[in-house]
Length: 242
Image (cartoon, rainbow, N blue to C red):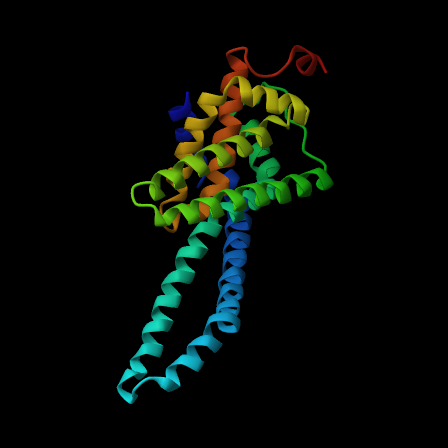
């Protein structure tokens, strides 16, 4: 079920029906990451650079290369930190575009089913901000664990697998039920949702491809919700009859 949901979502990424959402999601994701890059660069310039400039005059003349080396190290550090921000940015994008992605998938792959109900704009923004905060804190925790050999990579996959799986699944489920029911549905299928989240975390770990994570993850969880519902473990009777 999980592999099939991932396969269907992957095939949806470049379909003609999804192209408009893809370009919007990809464009905004890139703009946010560029903004973060410059913001982190400014933060470094305001904090670390004054200390570095105060240190360098006391060094011998031949040590001028230290400034260049420090700039290179800082650039690598900024890139690593930015990589950890991709997950929270992905989370924010999901809240903005999940309904559009879901509508395309539901109309194309499940035309006989009752369509989902888009989240009100205010609720969608609140969910996105909450998602951004939760995933951001989770990845900050994973960043701390980077200094622990053998745990760093595991921490990245476990943290993002759990958080991304949980939040994307509940986002998709809330098109058909209340937030409380979506949480209960996720809890009943927690193992399935976690392993689906690990696939999303794997997708997120691939450079450049990870820019498509909002589309892939949202699509995958829409399919997974549909598959769980088809097995009788998803939509409540009351919702089906509504």
